[in-house]
Amino acid sequence: MKRSAAEIIKEYGPFAGVEAVHGVTYDGTHVWFASGDKLNAVDPADGKIARSIDVAAHAGTAFDGRHLFQIAEDRIQKIDAATGKVLSTIPSPGAGGDSGLAWAEGSLWVGQYRERKIHQVDPETGKVLRTIESKRFVTGVTWVDGELWHGTWENEESDVRRIDPDTGKVLEQLDLPAGTMVSGLESDGGDRFFCGGGGRGNVRAVRRPRRS
Image (cartoon, one colour):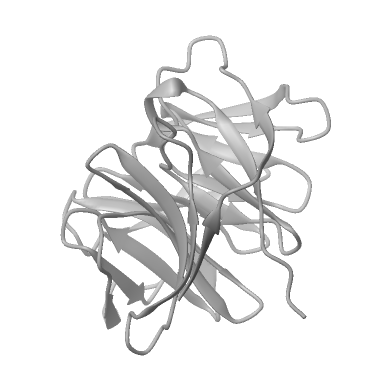
């Protein structure tokens, strides 16, 4: 297992009125983060909130290219990104104990925090298609270039780790500095991960390791 210190590239926030950052996603232009009763879109160029949607937003956030998906307690909402309207809901697999959320390969991938699990979920029905076991509490989840990464937050320590999607084995780990926590997680498809900063109410960009 390859292990190294996480390289923090940039910090966004804290933002006025935001007590905590939960889920994080990226739509190709803006970084979206969940703050309890809103979804907020941040311009990563200037770090300012460009738009907000009034919607329950308690945990993970994802984007499928057109829709936002947002965990609200024991359900996952499908939201029209253009209008902010909730189009449908499905049950969340952890029944309120869910954390991270990602979109990949036509499925939702849902972290179940204290159960140390990641579930592949049918976005239409909420049916759990498969479950991956992790070694630590799961916060954010993201797929990039066929790699499954998730954030951890346990015993006041956080890291971002790449795991084998078949076995759950840790393949690579980026350790965050002491006192720096990871709530949501999303890749920009390139060399950055966007990480929610939990109760600090901010978002960090962390460098994704290069591939040879």
